[in-house]
Image 1: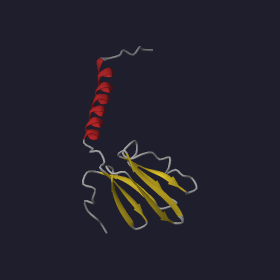
Image 2: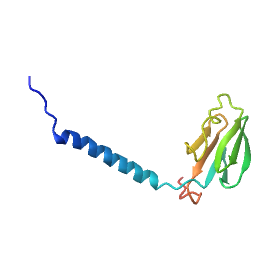
Image 3: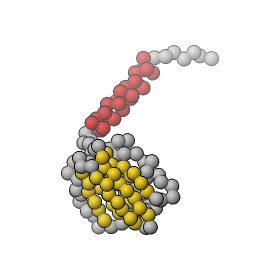
Length: 123
C-alpha cells in the first residue's frame, strides 16, 4: 500500500475556491441599497410606506386583522389574529428579512429598493 503525499495543489485549490466565493459574496451584497420604503399588499390593494415616518397600518382581509407598524426605520407585523402568527415572529424589515407574509390574511410586506416603484408589469 502506497502512502499519499500532500502536494501544494491540494492546499491551494480549495483555498482559491474559498477566496473566490468570499469575494463574489461581498461583491453581490455590497451592491444592495438599503430599503427606503416597504410595499404592503392586501387583496388587490397596494400601499407603499416610507420607513422614515413612524406609522401604523391596519388591514382586514379574509376575516383576519393585521397591524403593520413602521417605527425607527423598520417595519414589522405587530399584531395578527391569524391562527399561527408566524408573520408576527417573522422579524423586521430591513433587519434580517426582506419580506413578511401572513398567508391566512392574504397580506404581504416587502422591502422596496430605492425608487419604490415597479420597473415593469407583465400580463
